Image 1 (cartoon, rainbow, N blue to C red):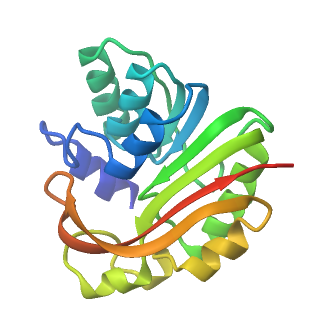
Image 2 (cartoon, rainbow, N blue to C red):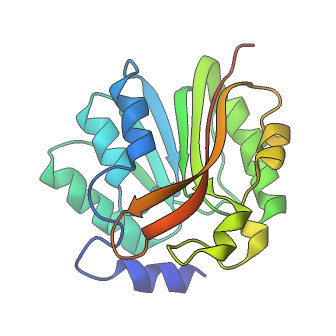
Length: 199
């Protein structure tokens, strides 16, 4: 799988574009900057947007080619990213450290997902926010992108359970029109979530 992503990101152009995800952008535009973690940040479109708007950004992906593209994009906008090459199985996070965590199409097998989500909850400060946009299991009926393995797709019930220690303030499954580079194009079914660590 790592070879797959390195091959995809090795292209000169930005596979998912350079503009941030719309749901993520809305969050950044309406919240005071702080420290934010972006797992699976790919080519850096979301991390760079956050940094440009005053956030202190930690990001990672397990593709070396993704990191190269992200640093190139950060240089273009004259911002700093703390971007590392990590995989979900071995990555560790500092506890009670982040004001926000953003998971934007960070798909992984269900057993890994549950472990990572628990780690991410611990990484948030009290009052910290978690934002997520990901393909739902119904995305199997669409051709606009995402994993073709249903175990790597999400449903609201699983996310409610994963984040039961947080106060979920927004959770919705919907069909949207995707326009995020070559591989996220057309109608797709996604889940959007915002939650807060209140204790």
